[in-house]
Length: 611
Image (tube, rainbow, N blue to C red; front, side, top):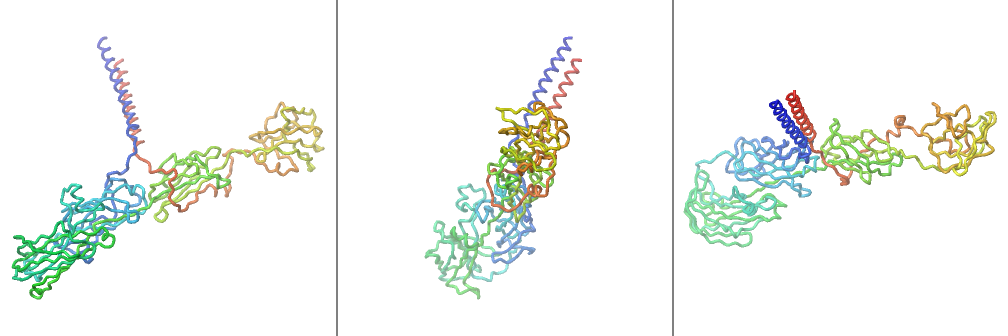
């Protein structure tokens, strides 16, 4: 017995623990129901970033895209034209991989911002590590809002992979080359700021002059270096002159000298004196910020005196630095604005109408979208595609219109307006009518309901006017839009009743009874409505009865009123909504299932132990 009690106690404890676990599992959905960034931090498949999609050009613009070998001693520009597929959602932190062609490689770290050329907004940042055959474009939240027509261009500098060095004797006397100075690998943000500006543009150019590669004896050598527009000499770095040898298309330094030089505007004059070795001179310039707005190439030329060209070679050389590291991208806002108005006036704005938004395939995009005081709601971040609205709750006093309101977001029309209308269910105000004159019809008229003032009720007559003699209908009050229902009592013509100040029309018309009963006992309505009484007052002849929504047969005009009207609009920011988050419903059902399973298991174990 004691063992059984112990077992039951243990089962009770287990059941309690199981129930607590069930509660905790059930709390999972509320705890994780914060907005989920769909695709945040994910790699996006962008069209145009493949290794075969790049165009390869040298500094002169010559196309080398299909060249089998590209020199590792030359600089080339890669150009990509990219596009994000219309159905892809892009969040901040998402990335796209850019693949380099097999013939080139990044010789230095490449890092720059990709911007919208119209607004200057940053779309993303591109980075490719030195020696890598690919790069990564990391997106900002730009395309979370601009969801239509997302495309752009990417350009950056690389070197070839082919070692084409030779052992032949150089056929020139002087040469000039230049390149962008990049931050060292692993540089801190402070160190990096010395090399590039806030937009990732370079601050330093390095120019290299190589002279006398065949190591001849040359006297009184003077170099005049002229800087092209958009740059100035970097006095903080000055210049460095190396002596050495030159072979295999490469300069090998063996020592340094300190020559005298003068800077005069955009010219630097360097006096070398007598030389017997190969000489290499490094000097630095700083491009101006304004120059990046007008050009992507900077030039430098040098003239050597004291040696008139060596063995027929010119004594002048030119160099060009081309910097095309940068990118651009554009996109438009895909959005819809719904305007809800009164069906009759097509002007009165209706606030409080609730809609659900679906894709054309029936997938819910967002629900509980409510029109504001201007009768508008705007939903942004829509991708290209077909959608429709469905009204789920009508404004107070209006009939629900469940007609689908379709629209389409396209590249040409990324912003559209949908108009919708609801029917007013509120009856029009009642205006008391004046006593009507005797009917001119030869047939006996059906008298309208007799209404007496509250202060002086009329006495119902005990007799009925014979059908052969047309009776004088009593003064009755009939709402303009509702037919009056004939009462079973008839007030004698000699004593017309006074119309009351208010009359509530019956919901269904009743047919006249065959016998007359006192007013205190109203007759039950018959199955068929009676014909309205003939009257000389036109306002009493064309009143319509109240009909339920299920009895209404829409005419062609009403159908056109409830259909959607679509047009291009200017972006509106009233009552704006965004794409919904996903995954919460699945997690909620999973939590409920796990909690239920745990509870059932605990109960079964408890029952088993008690048995």
